Image (cartoon, rainbow, N blue to C red; front, side, top):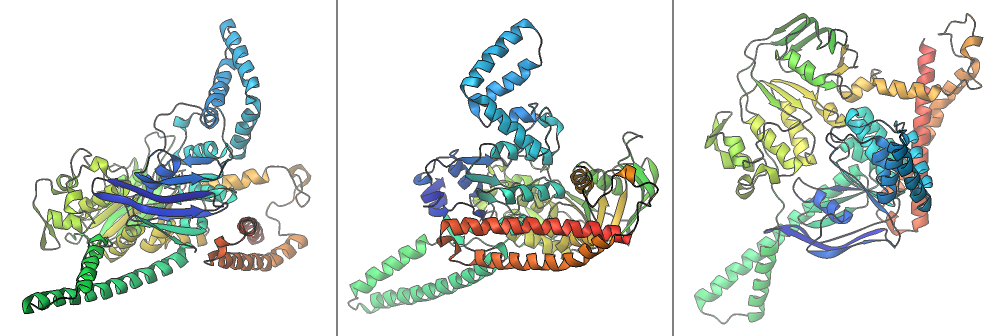
Length: 636
């Protein structure tokens, strides 16, 4: 029996149907990615599954006794609760009592002690101490300090606390809505690892293609109110989807041709006043109704970038430049960099390392506190803000874009504002709707429409990929590659960086700025790592010396960079074969999982195969890390 069943769900807002008798099932151990265009209703579907939204029709069924949990899309604002209070809040009454017990235990007055005893008695009656142990165990496993307040944590650590809250109840089904938004790459990598180890079923919405490739065992697409399942990995889904669209277009073309022939026949029958075949007339009426009910697939975004006059060959030059709000904590120091016309630069770094500050420094919005920065000539900059602050939520899309204009000049062509918005998939009706009712993806498209409606030869994009559907994202990549001017982009989307940028600039958080040729993967191949990754690695090796390690005080005067021992050399030689063997096993398992009939088999075998894939992937990750460590030692 399926763990989760959606049966004939229907939901419409006004005349716009989001769900039209949509159905799907999900089994234990599956990690299902829900894809679809912006505005199709993916987030709404998750809210229906979680019980937040009641559909117009249809049923959501969870297996008897199954527990469902949700990782929220938005992070809390100004939340002063401790991590312990947030996680324990997953157990409504008991969580409140545990939080109250923690608060009272830090007070010493008599009144507090009396209240503490009452709380303790109630906790014992509810078996609250076993839940307290579960909360503290998961916080320890995720390296979260229980007394740390949420408003002092970065977005990545807040997401970690919220995931701990979602998983502390041991759920059977976990719902995730754009979990990687606003997370830096190390936080995304940590999230991937934590979710791969989760044994329950996951239904998630994401447009991060690298995340989907790592996570999804099956893809379900929400398309024109229907849920279509593809029992395949993400890359295989792309192939199957393209073939399905081609077949749909072929069938529609045949139907339309036949309908046209029948319409011609009925008109000829009237003209000649001949007796008509009433069966054929009824069939024609049925065909007309079928064509009327057909929901055509929406158009594809087709925007272009408004080019300004070319800037000078030199865009910006920095020599020994730096910036600091506090002299003892420089954000950028000793930076030497030259940006030329046509460069596509990606800024990479953990959250809080100063990427936005660096952009403002390079574009002259901030004066350097050390060194010099020289700007080129004829710079016209267009800026994409990740917070969408340039949008007035109370005004509609038309007013946000037009700013009093009826026509817009795009590369010498005059376009009506409504026509221009249609290139970004806004119908005239939607263009007149207030921005406050737009989805995150629609707001991102409107921001792009505003950005590209103004002449520019320097584009600055701060997290442009958040909320964009894959089709729009791929078109944006193509336009940025074609753009003759300069592009500076801040992004944690690994695939987007690989597809767009020619140079990667890395900020390590200490003020150092280093430049590498190529995209994100090229930076990784050149030895690029994040400080938090090194910290995690050092924490894993701080558990004390192993049998192959000498304690530091026993090394005497040995050189720390001594060559590998014979045993380690032998291990280093054998590791590539072991890694290759594991990669072969993973490939075989992924092929089996990608088979269309995989999930119709024995549930125990399905669970065992998925668990084996996860375990093998973990073994591969461990061997890869060990190989990198030994290679580093050998090169010293």
